[in-house]
Picture 1 (cartoon, rainbow, N blue to C red):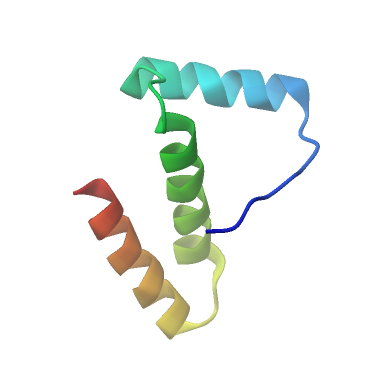
Picture 2 (picture 1 turned 120 degrees about the vertical axis):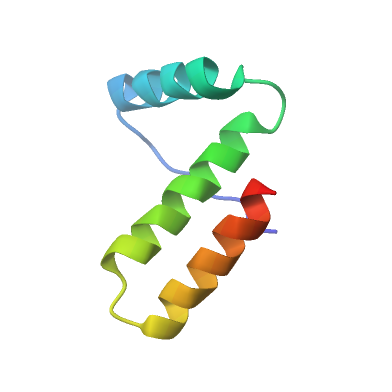
Length: 65
């Protein structure tokens, strides 16, 4: 497990949290799950590597289960 420290625009973070709250309720762990899902979606959409896309699709399926 890796920890990421980043400065993020406050409005983007607020909107992201609002979407998480609407979708999931913002219980413990929901922010982490949503951030990981967003990262996997980004890999699927923009990676040029088929193996990376396959990994992201598998991880997303496991993540959703």
